[in-house]
Structure formats: structure tokens, C-alpha cells
Length: 410
Image (cartoon, rainbow, N blue to C red; front, side, top):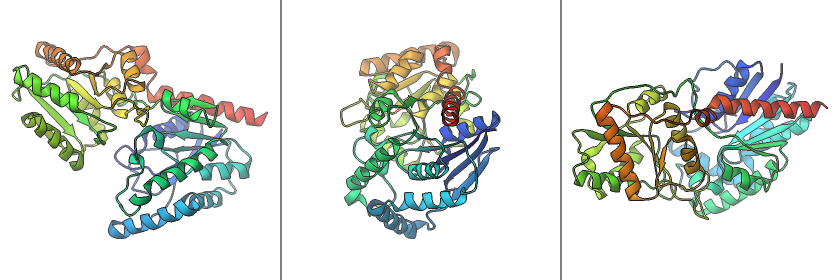
């Protein structure tokens, strides 16, 4: 039996890092002895049959928590404190345990150092999986935190962590990441970089026929800054279709399953385009309900923005993959005109729109379909769709891991 240690940054609700959570369960179900070690953050309520070890780093909440975060972040900026602390704890914890492989998955830098140093001590291969990187988004959006105390040095913090990340991933025996853009960017630092998309769990996201007495457009999840997600074309199209009488609130609604902060941003957009009467705001729901919500929707909204030199780059939102799994019509605005648009086009999942007329036509066509049937369905290309399942992606990981272990034993 192959033994694998997977190190990961903190698992947080509601999704609990599905890419790694699914990978761990897949490997465990296929005969691997899996240990997941992560930073202690919140109760882990998802089912699992593998060992999970948690190492606490922060110990306070509220104001004290913000102060603690600022102090420890400053120490980490100056001396890589968090990575050193976690590495020490990990090396102590697993000093006498055997593993065939160590894998580290992260959205930036932590806990790459722990994976590298433990692998060095045990003389075994290690792999890094980068789910996000700072360079994919403009500014410092991937370093935002509840504490504003470090905002004056945010750029320095970002730069230091990028430098540390790049030094470590150069030493990884294998590197994986989430989009074609990420692969090309990271190959500069590690030529063994492989593409493994994010995706959908085929046992959770699948098509169902659910007739509705209203034409529902839905959005689930957080809304990010306009530089990453620009929904303007959608609101403009809704206004225009309302003005000509194509859509009205008696037969059409837009349901937003999102946070109160995101709801406030949406309300500003809706007021600007005078479509407040179409809006229906709902708090986050249990992830188990998402497939039903998608299948009740005539259109699933995915927000993006056009790729620019400063970013965004290669952002492949999980919301697209979930809609693909449910075979719901995807309306993506604005098109990134890059990786996400290619995936939408290649799977025939819907439209990544660049013009107002495209958006209006797509909504009008789907509205006509709904009026005839009481539901809509997207005829996706099944073979392409299946390649984006988490089952297929976990198998990709497994084959790469087996190759590393075999190579190390020669």
C-alpha cells in the first residue's frame, strides 16, 4: 500500500477545498494510505475515511484575532515565520513515519516549505499543486484579510511570498496547476508543470429536469471586485429586455445565493440599471442544495472579466464546472477571451459574451425555450464535459503520483 502525506492550507466552509478533499477520498478509496495535514481553522464537518491532522496557528478571534494576524503576518514577512513554524511542527509530528510521497496544495505559498523540508529529511519525492497564484489577479486581491493593519505593506508582502514560492516550486519533483495560462506561467520556474483543471463531482452535479413557473437566472457564491468579475453586460441586457417587454418580474427573477457583502454590491448594480424588481436575495445555502438550485435555473450566471496584461489570468471559477455538470445553460460575462471562454466553447456549455447583443440574444433564446418547456437544458459535449469531472482529475493526479514513486525507487 502506498503511503502519501498531503499538506494543505486551511480548509474553510462551505466548500472545504474540494479539489484536495476529493483527491484524498479518491486515493483512499483506491487503496492508498492517506494522511492529510492542514492548518486548524474551523470544524471539518464533511465525511471522510482518511486521517486528518490539524495544526493550530492562530488562537484568537475578533479584535485580538486581527491583532494576532497582523503580528504574525509581520513576522512572516520579515522571517517567513508561519512557514517555519508549520514546517517544524510537521517534521516533529511525522519524524518516525514512512511515506512514499509528500504533496503540498496551496493557493499561494503556505505550506510549501514544510513539504520540501520533510521530503528532504526523508529523501522522498514531493509534488506541489498551485490552485491559485497572486499573478492571476490585479493588485492584492488574493491577500485581502479582515485586518487592515498590513495594507500599507501589502505589495511588499505579496512580492516576498512570490519570491519564496518560486524558490520552492523550482525544487518540486512535480508541479500541477489549474489552467493553461497557469501552466505556461509556472513552467518558467519548473518545467515539469502539468495541467489538472478544477471541476465538478459527477456524483453531486448532474442534470435533472425540474419545471418551474418562473424563468430563473441564478448566481451562487461570492462576488469579487469588478477587475475580476464584471457583470455590467448582464444588468444592461436585463434592463433592455425589460424595457421592450421581453422580460417582466411576473415571469422572471434573478436569484442571488451569496453573502450580505456581495448582495450590497449587486443592489448597487441593480439600482444603476433600474432592475431592482427582478432581484431575489438569498443567503448561502448548504452545498448539498446547489445541484437542485442549478437544475431549477433556466440560466446559470458566471461572472468574469477580460484578460489584460495586469490580470485577470486563467481564473476558472468552480461555478462554471458545477453548471457544466448539471448541464445548465451558462451565461458568462464578461468573457475572459481566454481559458474560461475556451472551456465554455469547447464543451458547448453556453456563451462567454463580449457584447450586449450577444447577452440579450442568449437570454431571449433561453426564455423562449423555457416558455415552451417549463425548463431549459444545455446539450453539452459529453466527452468534453466528462474530462472536467473531479473523478477524471483525481485519476490524473494518481497517475502522476505513481510515476514519481516508481521513479524514486529505481
